[in-house]
Image (cartoon, rainbow, N blue to C red; front, side):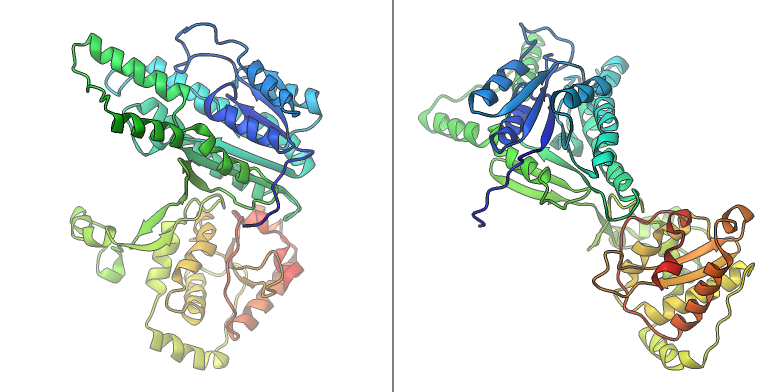
Length: 480
């Protein structure tokens, strides 16, 4: 392990819900390593409504701890729903903001059947709208300085739990985190912004979980339900002491500390952390079940799905990309690739004869001509096992309604030292509004390059962050 300690000198961090539990540990850790910390906590109860003693100004205690240890911190008592006020306090205190840890949240204890609309909306307002409000207010400052780290604190409840409002709110943060990372990728000039957004699933015993458990037990007692007796033997006490130590919030903080450090390059990731255990969670796609004309079907039937369960329950490690704007990949592209795929021998045969073939691309060509050229490119350059890569880099193509007439441009950037090292296929729709954005010379260059590249199989690699045809303006002329 490296002997160099990671620090946050000259960085300013906002931690919401930092008066107790997990948020407190995040604040203490960053401050102990040089960060100036804004300790935000409204001081409410875990469910957002119940008054349980004096809880206001609890942020002051954490600030005192940090200052007593020689660190820098200020308290803030605004609600996260008022994100503008919270961020304004950060800027007034330290003049900048580098790290946002969206930790504040409430837990409504109602089960699905007992959950009221008011409780459901109250939970989402704090846990989702509050995070949105904070990050959106912070965004202009991060963009201006071209740097920022955003961490969203979710929960294992997102996998499903007996608290549906809380589960839904924490699952929503995963999509929000991935979308914010994509927004960062779209910033131009490309490659000049170091803004990362990630999320974690903490496992810890906190004031929220303890008070929730106590309230559930009290509710069961009132309903006359039997509670499991607590064992009092020496072995049980020893085990409880060990579990208490393992589930301490301090065992989560290291993951948050890494994700908000300037050396961390993670983007749109989701990590678990707790009890000395850390892992990364990712989305995986099963084997693809195709029901197309290639399988002799005009339209998929319910029976096709029934009979394809073995395929849909087989996993090959097809990881679904997040945070790059492709929304996990488009099924239309998968079907196009599937319909275009041929045997390896046929691919090799076409490669031998490719130099003798002539391909013409012109403005206003029909969609059948477009498909023909696309199929030829796929047959020539997509080897066994490469289909997944093609699906990733062409997923935005189907999102742009490429069934219409258009101009097909095949683009490769082959410099492995180039940050924009990628391969993609684009179809430019022929509508006047889109064509007006493209210079005639740019099109001519693209067409000539396409003719050359069809006779020269490239090294295929992939990139990230492109979304619509409009975002790629001028790239072909500049790179090829």
